[in-house]
Length: 197
Image (cartoon, rainbow, N blue to C red):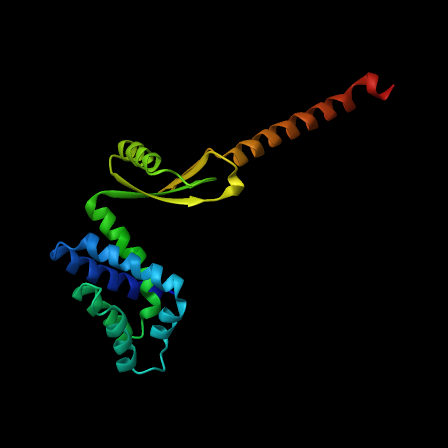
């Protein structure tokens, strides 16, 4: 993303954050934005329609009103209309990311992603959240992902930290150690006088 676009996105996210904080609506606005992101992921044509610059603002705002007018908080709905009028709706994903970061920092939260080979049960997710909350001294919010390629164990990503306890990663480390030992043994044998006789 270009610096100018990132600047615009940060401006929008900060403005929305300040307004939502003043109205004590930080989590509600965040939840509605995340639901919108899911809708746009499932129906990308809706987002693409709102990003079209050659369509009139009236047409796009009418679409917003018809689809989201009754389901979104007025603050968020008005904010979306601003993005449409300014032809900046393509910045919505970045605005969401920045708004989420500002909200988490304000509420003392830390987000973590946990990847496992099979889906985690609710009790397991809660246990992971409790452990991470205790470690970081912040409320942990865990998002889970499933990747059968890791075979077992889990991969945890929090802030800039990665914890890879997957079976696939463990097997790679074993393979690396075995290969190194094999190369060392081959080198030793080659240097042995008995080998050259």
